[in-house]
Length: 388
Ligand code: HEC
Ligand code: HEC
Image (cartoon, rainbow, N blue to C red; front, side):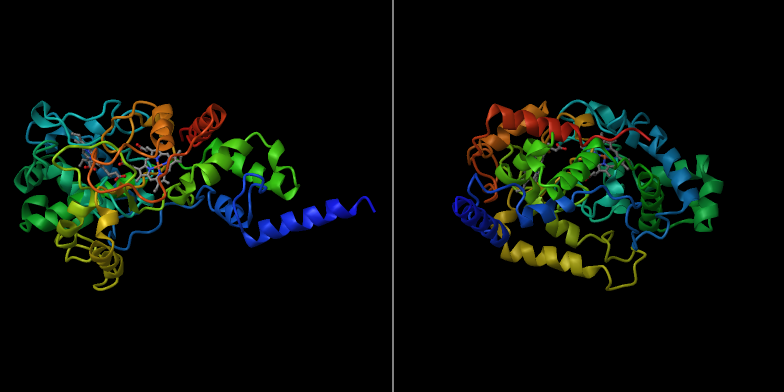
């Protein structure tokens, strides 16, 4: 007799959970959708996916030459700036908001890490490169970074790496008279090196696996990762964008980061030049058979027309792996700590008027408790893996 009320309650609760109905605070975490999402967060045990646009991408000789070029300041017109100048240290970035290039000029944005860059498909905060190899041409030629030119590149390759280059490309650098081909070859060996810079496993992965086992055993709430994961997935909605094994959807969103620079429109300004760029993945310097790489670019082109408002002031969702090593944060590098990042999300981004466009509809005031904020910071810190 006395059991009936309890049974009815349990059944109703189970139905609410199973049907994914209202998200009342009482609903047990995780519900079925949330469970599926949690299961997607496992570390990739595989190497970065093959890049069909770069036939040297997994070539060890190309990676070895790429490493030498990555560290060579002789490729810059000023003679003292290499890729490594701004992508150094454990986090493979700098610890200041901006980095310094040729002639002490400051970059417009914060350098992201190059660790795990082989797992992305868009590059730069605003997506103005669509492959790792074509990204490398931008800092080489940028007047504030390496300020180089095809002529400087050709002379340096010929002086210092002639035989390495010839072994890969079948001719000496001086005999490569097509500037664009020379640049593409440079990018492809750099990318082959960057594709080896992987650091994917972290304590976070073990926590998720253990938590999923606790869910199975009906003991989710007893697990030490419970509050952090619940806040990340449910109240904070972080996993709406930071999802999958790399904790990124590889898409562009406006989350309300203060930016009043001339260059603050993000992907809305960068996409059209990229779509017209001869070095993009559908262009003549791509190794993919013609036509096979155009679908992704076509989608972005459609989004530019159909979702223009959403792309205004939108930036790429960065991976959160190794996030503790890459402060300061955001494309502006304005936020010094992970605590500052949580405060920005907690207030639903900066007020409109501080950046181009409007915040994504997922970004709302969160009203996180101190305990929830601390649990989120702890979770973010657990996403940093051991050095290999
Ligand atoms: C003077 C500093 C500087 C130098 C030199 C430099 N970078 Fe960067 N790097 C940056 C900045 C700043 C960004 C972000 C730019 C943006 O998004 O507008 C960046 C972005 C990147 C990215 C994109 C990462 C991502 O997740 O989107 C990669 C990859 C990269 N750089 C590799 C290189 C390579 C390869 C070289 C040498 C050919 C190089 N960098 C030289 C500062 C630098
Ligand atoms: C609507 C998609 C979206 C949601 C939701 C979201 N993020 Fe982000 N996140 C982004 C984007 C986009 C950026 C880069 C924004 C920029 O620089 O303008 C970012 C940047 C970050 C950074 C800084 C990364 C770096 O390398 O500088 C951290 C840390 C972060 N998010 C954590 C979180 C946490 C924690 C939550 C939940 C409270 C969350 N994010 C929710 C899209 C999202």
